[in-house]
Image 1 (spheres, rainbow, N blue to C red):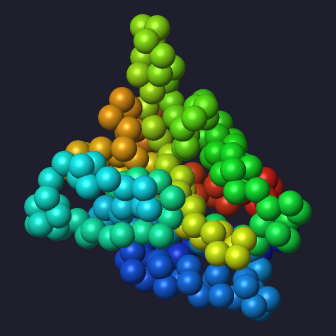
Image 2 (image 1 turned 90 degrees about the vertical axis):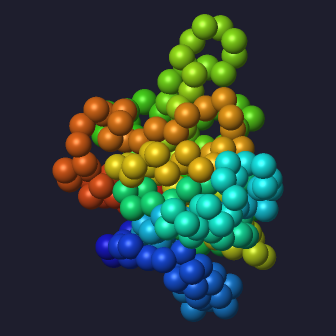
Length: 226
């Protein structure tokens, strides 16, 4: 994918978590020294559990050894947030952006814009996602209040890091992955939500869905972060 409106979007395919970190690090260095621009790296990871800076060990429902025995890698992550799960069929987006170059740097506003872009992406494929006050990410379904409504389902997680106002890490949008992988953790430390995916919400199989969502994400983020 070619650069568009100041944001270069690249689809990298399936990349190990360690390789993804290395790619991010190079992109961040290039942005800091002026040899590279703002980038969105789109990829997917083999099964991996990652723990953010706010992660609690109690949100691992199995021991680390048991998780690894299931063929799931385990990594500490230099991003905000708690614990999450990655696997093929989940679209991961690493945003490397200089917030200072985009006006007054505001990390919270940046996160809200990521949420908005993901909600626009979901709308393009026929789903109504929403943001929830006080919680980070994109959700489906009813409210959290005890009002008898359907509990919310989380479809996208967000966790970022910032170095000299250049961002890294980003979002993970569940598209067609096997959601049973989340059973080894309390996703994002939220025990009152369930994880869902685009495929599950649309009640359709994965044929062509990953590519469709990837193209919508590329177009939407290029527009929102123009």
